[in-house]
Length: 378
Ligand SMILES: Cc1cc2nc3c(=O)[nH]c(=O)nc-3n(C[C@H](O)[C@H](O)[C@H](O)COP(=O)(O)OP(=O)(O)OC[C@H]3O[C@@H](n4cnc5c(N)ncnc54)[C@H](O)[C@@H]3O)c2cc1C
Image (cartoon, rainbow, N blue to C red; front, side, top):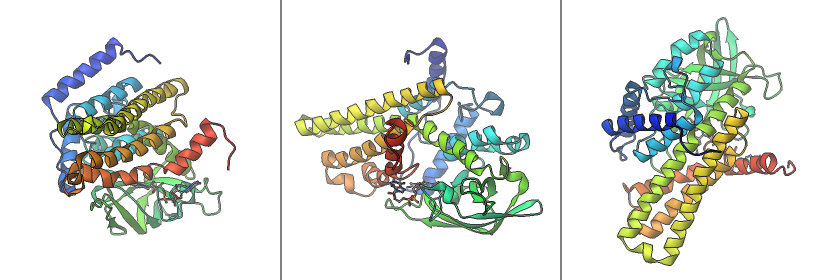
């Protein structure tokens, strides 16, 4: 693919750089989870007011009709500016595009604008205690009662549920149908007594995700996305957006972290140790490979209209590299990287989840083996 920017792309980048110059994101507070979330909410609101909240959305819904290349530029520039992820990341990257693809006019009118402004936060209620990698095994059931659905079951690992107004919920509406066919997709209001949220504390000390207990939660029939039994296909739209949308942001974050570590190594003289220099060199090669793989992913989308299975390779390489980098940082910076409050200590602990969230490394390896390399199915 041609990586030279067109005039239009340069114009887009310069406009964004100017805006970021006059609206710098500032430093995200790391010590307090609620304060960090409030900071990211404010940041998203500022993006919204500048018209930058969701460049990849169509203009008629508040986006900028950005091409894939412009979206890549957007994420790279956010990385350069050290910007945090917006508070409503799941709304912008997952719920919004899924509603745009499957929603009725009424649903688009109701839900899209508050997603952009971060006025209403969204979470993703897919995983269950016995349905993670195998999403089609979802057991949470929804039973129709007049013009409402009544939902009972349990979800787990639901990120930002504690801040969310809405949940993208996959539930079983037909227990008789084949596994994938009996599912439907709902937009569930989290603000009801029948939805109980229990935080799960992670190794970082934060409770980024939660358990959700649903005891006859009520969802108006108008809040089903797609038709009854379409849940699997609607969920695939959400999952495809998850892997393609985040790729660029993650690789710019990695580059930023690596540059930070190289500076530290220069400051404390560790860079003169050939073993350290070689390890940093390997990180550079991996990070650059990821950047090029992310662009390659773009050209695949341009050619075929949707992300290919190669995206799994990017996610696998990113999670492995991010974990290696935070371990290398401890070696280079010494014990202070293990003390509370040090950003590297947080990264070291948080990166353990990278090889689980958004598809485990084992599942990604299966996809690469079967669908990229064409090896026999196990
Ligand atoms: C930080 C974080 C945030 C998350 N946020 C959300 C969220 O907001 N919403 C949401 O719905 N979910 C969320 N998840 C859940 C995540 O999607 C699941 O954890 C993931 O899909 C794996 O499912 P599981 O935990 O049930 O593990 P399982 O599927 O039970 O897997 C257990 C182990 O078996 C391996 N395994 C399973 N099947 C196979 C196979 N066929 N071949 C080889 N190995 C296999 C897995 O790789 C894993 O090592 C989050 C997870 C994390 C870590």
